Length: 265
Image 1 (cartoon, rainbow, N blue to C red):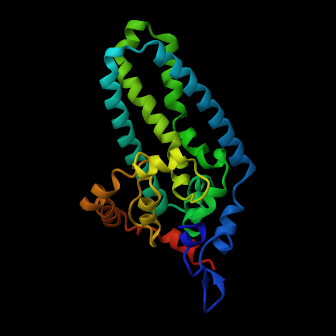
Image 2: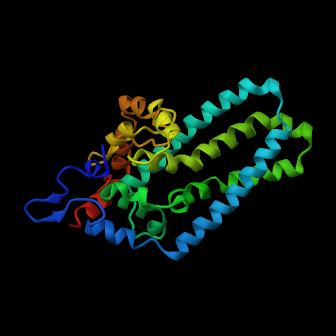
Image 3: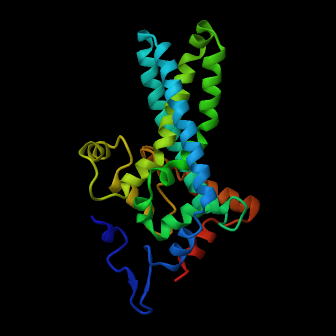
């Protein structure tokens, strides 16, 4: 499936000769124009700081590693993936379903989600910083806290919490790379062989799997780190039940703002 096919075989409304979706869509163009220099600076700062701390904390984890802990580390990796997958689904669902671009944080955090639905391949045109900057910002405080412990605690104290720190570290790694996995799920040409192998093994988000989410009104398969939790959560009806509860309590309907942008033909 190529980029054109992902956007649909009929890119234009035949009656009005206006683009239904893609980079020529009026809503997509307006949203893309709202990516500001200030937002770019925030992403660069967060990416740089987090990257440095990831390297520093890796060195400390390596220095304090004990071979007998290998199984616990393996379990920590699995739990880190599952937690990141659930977290990606929760954030993705919340940003897709609620909020508005016009709110205080809307242009920074809601705008990319709105743009992505009406121009799904826009993420493939974003560089590494724009794709991953927000995720690196999310894990920054966790990496700061971890580095502080490594610099201030004794070896004996670090050993007591080592397994927990390994879980947090691996969780941060998976969270920080979630949007990269997401980007690759929309990239149909030029991916390295090892990436497509990871996708086919469902170790990272597969293209066919994520395509289910992009069927309007985008109300299913929200988890985008690996997508492992999508099927069981849909079987349980987790998101539907949560939306029903929110509507009962607050009267707020999901995806109203998302639909508004999609209609800007």
